[in-house]
Structures are given as C-alpha cells and as structure tokens.
Image 1 (cartoon, rainbow, N blue to C red):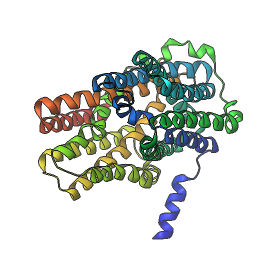
Image 2 (image 1 turned 60 degrees about the horizontal axis):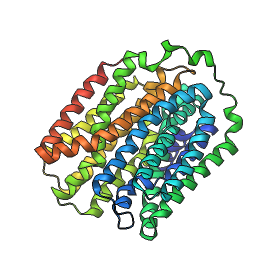
Image 3 (image 1 turned 135 degrees about the vertical axis):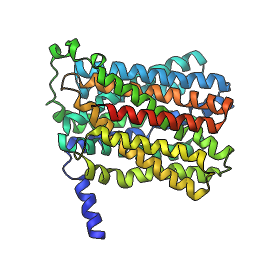
Image 4 (image 1 turned 180 degrees about the horizontal axis):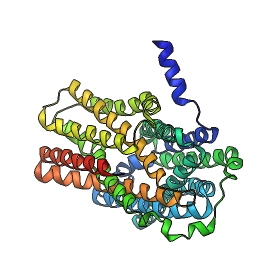
Length: 396
C-alpha cells in the first residue's frame, strides 16, 4: 500500500517540464512574501497610521480595482511583448512598489500607490498563466496548473504565518519582505528562464487580429460570467463563513484557523494525484460542474444542520474537494479556446473574473448576512451554485 501510494505520487509529479517547475518555484517565492494584503486593514487602522475602517475599506477596494486593470493590461502586454518580459517587469516593479507603499503616510499617496501596486502585481498573472501553457503539453496541462496552484497555496500559508510574526514587531517589515521576495523571484526567473523564454516568439500581426479577441468569443464570455458567479460563492469561504463560524456557531479562533488550514493541506496532499487520475478522461466542463455542485452542497448543509466541530471538518473536506475538481479544470478549459498569439488576453480576462468576484464576495455576502441573516445568505449561495452548475453543464 505504501509503495503504491509512493508510486502514485511519483507518477502525478513526473513528466512536467523543467520550466514548469521553475515557474512554480517563482510563484512559491512570490506568494511566500505576500503578507501585506492580509494585514493591510489592520495596518491602516492601527494607532501608527490612525485611519478609520471606512478609509481602510476604500483602500482595499482600490486593491480590487487595480487587480482588474492589471488583468486587462497584463493580458494585452503579454500578447504584444511575450510572457517573459512582462513577468520580469511586474515582479521587479511590484517589489519596488511594495517597499514604496510602506513609506507612504498620507492617505492620497497610499491610495495612488495601492492602485498602482495592485495593477502591476496582478499583471503578472496572465503572463504567468500563458507561460505555463507554453511550457506544458496538452496531456499534462491541468497538472501543470495544479502544480502552480500548489505553490500559491504553500506560499499563502508561509506568507500568512510569517506576516503575523513580523507584524508583532513592525508593520514596515511586511512591506520590505513582500518587496524583496518579489525582486528575488524576478532575479530567479531572469537567471534560470531567460534561455527557455527565447523560444517564445511573438507575432505582431496576430496580436492585431481583432477576430481572435476573447471579447468576441461568446462562449468564453459566458464561461467568464459563470466563473465570476462561482468565485463569488466560493470566496464566502474566506470572508463571511469565518464570521458565521465565530458569531453563530461559537467556534474558537484556533478551530476556525484549523478549518482553513485543512483546506490548504488537502490541496497540497491530494490535488496533483487526483488531477493525474482524472485528466483527459472527460470534458473539462464535466469536472468543473461536479466541483461547483459539491461547493454548493456545502453551503446548503449549513442551513440543514447545526454544525458540530466534526461536521464542520467534514464540510471543509467537501468544499475542498469541489475546489480541487473545479479550479484546475477551469484553467484547462480557457486554454482550449486560445492560440499562441491571443493567450495573454484570454488569461487576462480570466484574471479579471476572479478579481471581480474577490471584490463582490465580501460586499454582497456581508450585506445579505447583515440585513437578512446568515440562513438567507447560505440559501442564496447554494441556489446560485446550482444555477452555475447547470450553466457549466451547458457549456461545450
């Protein structure tokens, strides 16, 4: 049994190209330093800065708007100049902007640098997604994206833990570490991926072909709309659900932290082998739809049962299984609608979809919970998940 499991893990991680591993290492370093955003609201409302929660919320909204702009411009720049220079520029530029943002004290300057930083930082994502597609083969593309997701989850876990420690000493350290890890990731990419990136040739004529634009692809636009709805439901996991666990179910903070940790640990432990077993067996939308309905069923169960601790753990396993089924295959789906010359714009629109949802999820979820109660929120999220399930089933 042990030898079989070990062999399964070896098979799941084998066959991926060296640049794919390097891109995931770059992402791991980059996300391990991502500690400013989770602590930004606390930083702005601290005695050191003294801004109101309303102003802090406005700054966080600028993060969302900057991310949307970054997805748009990052995709276009990737198709025009190639994924390698865009990644180098956004990593190094983002690193410098993180450090500068930490030096800003006036509210207007904080707003300007926050928006600019988010724009530059998120422009990295379409370029990175395009690079993964370029360095992967069709039969291991979903696993290549899963490896990248694994790096992101590990990076967030490390960054969150390290950020909490550093914040006890000085919030300024968060900005410096975030900036320096971005620059370190840029240096790593320049050192080890420059030669491989030279194989990626950009054809300007193809870039100007308006008929190849994702904004003219009606099926893809429907897919993006469904992704926004799905992500708005999913992001309740990291926003209103934590408050529900604390305020309604009286779970302790350490237990809530454990539940969130289970999500990340399960992704690291089983996503690659599950994708390895499923990749290529059915259409991508088949797995996406099943993942969506699993996530919707978790929110449905919140209203059916008064959750005990063990049921909450089981629920977290269910929602994580839905995440593992849906998200890697979403990446594979959008790739199938692209060619080498418009992939950046498709990746950019996909990035924008998640940024929109990340902005809408806490706003809409919070308003529903405040004015109509958590039960109404969970019925709405479960119902919307079911509609999204039907939508993905209808996609071809």
